[in-house]
Length: 205
Image (cartoon, rainbow, N blue to C red):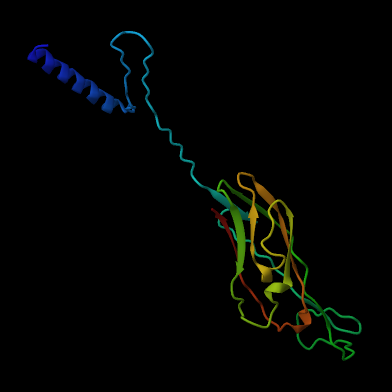
């Protein structure tokens, strides 16, 4: 091969390599097998690495969608003995009170919340935490709120005073309802409007 032919060959190889890079074609491994006698078996192997990335996702919905935070409300009710009489708003209202302590109920429990969770992580867990009450004292305790779960998404704790961590199945939609019930000794609570926020956190590991 002349020097001119050698030059043209290198030029052609370089041009083909450039076209390969421009086209975005992956360059795989190359080998050869050779037997000068032209007999027997020859082999050549080439390897290709495959890589698949699956993003990790976790979803959690408690009640309403988007940025709406549902509010569960209870209003305690009193009954004045001996009639009995349920108080109404006003002042200096006459009542046939027999001078015994009134009876108190914690209030009507609100409807259950619809809940859903999903993850493709190896393990999905959910836990809860209760912020400080405002006012800080005088009202019901976290343990007074029992939560009954139905369906495939368990509540992390039987009461809000026992918030723990519970798991749900990966790659399977977990759904159900959580019903909150307020109990405890309502007659021991001091008058006031008590508020707090329960935060649920779903984690995929």
